[in-house]
Length: 349
Image 1 (cartoon, one colour):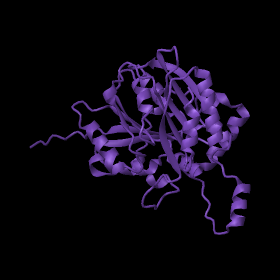
Image 2 (image 1 turned 180 degrees about the vertical axis):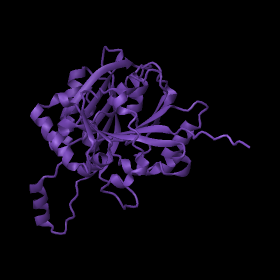
Image 3 (image 1 turned 120 degrees about the horizontal axis):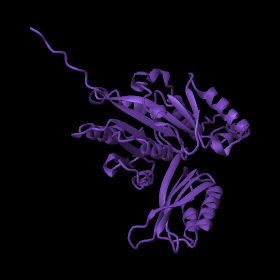
Image 4 (image 1 turned 90 degrees about the horizontal axis):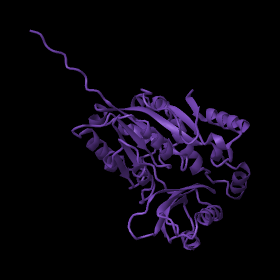
């Protein structure tokens, strides 16, 4: 009797794109989708906060072969904290489709820790059907060069002099480093904004943080060949020990150090003045991230704005829907933001 061999079920590869707030994850993902060439790629977008901007940006991208149903948005908190409630059901739904995707890309929140997400791929019903092709960590090179994620030794010494029992930690540094420590590929983004000397210093700093050698690439506007991003074949779910975390051993990860809220803004008199006001607000209130949309008088297209610290970008993208010309801006920063002050500053039309 001859027994026919059963072909192994092909696991769907999953790419995790991580990186701190404003590193350029959505832009990289948009570029990736524009070069899919018919390949069925499903996207899971996770944001810190209740209002999803990145998913809306992708849905309005106008890329052929990128239907809305292939973009799944989760805004109930970072995936690293909501694995069982949000992530696992979403992934099961995707792979149970009559025609499942050929590849899945997950864009994490800028405050997410990748490792808890990677651990979820060890769940039995996920492990047999999916594999983590690779973790891509985007780095905002100007932010690193500015020292955003570095400790201030003098400030720490002054704090500890007043209170010797103070257990210092830097939440920005810990999240940034955890994202790097899980990486299979590190992409230094926005390299056009730095000199060669400054870039080399950033590369040296990043290299010093990595526990083992990693491929590091430079990019502008997240533009890289999909062949470089997909097909890493890392099997990251089987390689967790080589991806240390500041939060290893913790029962759970909270985001008590950060907060996010969305504000409505009236129609604006002009784009440049509004963007300048956003930059001023970020500087005055120490805002980490601003992003959203606004209407401008005399314009039929909405104004999309993206800000990292005081660095702002804006563009008119898609037609405004309906008669309502109220805009929405998401604000993200360390706990204790002056919401009332920020809201008052943004109410000027």
